[in-house]
Image 1 (cartoon, rainbow, N blue to C red):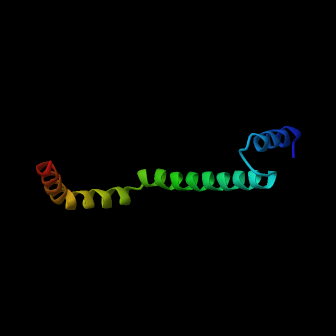
Image 2 (cartoon, helix red, strand yellow):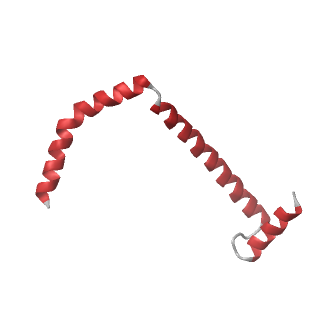
Image 3 (cartoon, rainbow, N blue to C red):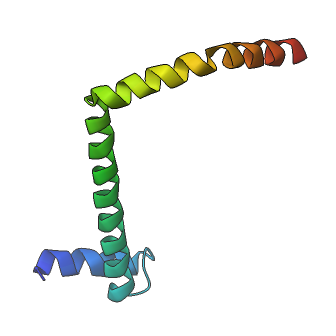
Length: 80
């Protein structure tokens, strides 16, 4: 490990942000893995934006639910 990383980790421990180096490193690894997973999911959503079959299916679903969505909106407005 680089000296500045150890010093920054020890500073975080001294400030009460972690109980130990091990806890700090484990949390950092979990955060990095979660960030990588979010990036994978974001990339999949980005691909969906260019998927014409998905876009077509979505439009069909939207059309099929348009009437019931409108009815639900009207009912919700009447309750207030």
